[in-house]
Image (cartoon, rainbow, N blue to C red; front, side, top):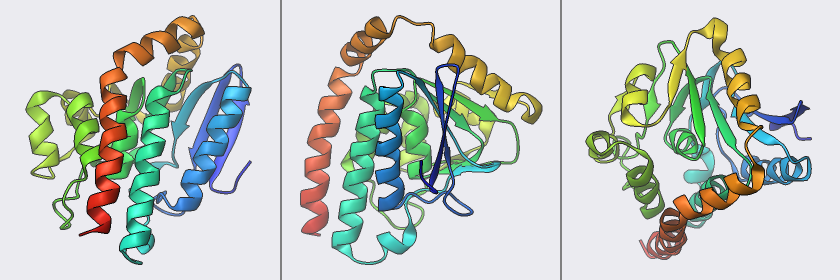
Length: 231
């Protein structure tokens, strides 16, 4: 469907594999491709399984765009937050298969999944914004507050602490970690299991469970756009 995200449909599971260079940077084009793939998955009535190449899930936003000017950075952050909101509200189950490093927006993507499978290995998962001199945006704070464990929230957001896969489970970025030999099989197993849920009940329950978070994100996206443009 796109060179940036490979779309494969099999047995009711739509696998979206990020394929944007060495770190799967999230550019405006990748975010557009994400929406196109999610549209297609809805049309296919499929569970969504999102993954990356071996060794990296995503390194976050495209730094070339972030460094191109405040207007470009603001638009990219806003569109990324809107993508997060769409994933959180997606009517079908969404499984994240974290294939390696997940940094900044890559780690935020993990928080948008209904179930997150990680691969064991020397990988880092976390939010490095404060470490590289960026004040955390409102949408990121709202998402992290809702999805991370309380004991890890401020360590991850304020202190930019990075977590190995096992520690990322305890922190709330992942739900489980498996050995590399079982990684793809386990992610697909989870997706197939979730495909047996009653789709209407899943979608309606998800809307209720995440109502406050979705409203908080709507407000945060507006605040972020206003504050970044006037910074």
